[in-house]
Length: 146
Image (cartoon, rainbow, N blue to C red):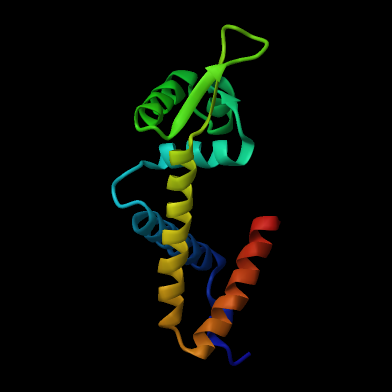
């Protein structure tokens, strides 16, 4: 038991992990999206890319928000040419939304920017740090699956 880190309280480990993951996510968002889209908008684009055509209500449920708020988000995305609408095939009261070609391109650019930034950041690490990072990633995955 010569490892002093073995005696760190779990509460401290959890606090440090949350802080580190939050900081990394904020940095990835900043690098991939310098002021263009907010978190709700990027979430909607990701959801539409993953699921295809969806109604406002379905998107609102999926993103845990009110349909009125989702309508506002979709309106802004539509004005920016990132989403398109079409009538629902069986319910004339509803509208379906999907990504436009520009929306798909915006998602691709975000993904590429995140990848490039993270690759550059990892390139600054030495071999031992990269080994530690690989081990940490495996542990974080296990936490996410538990």
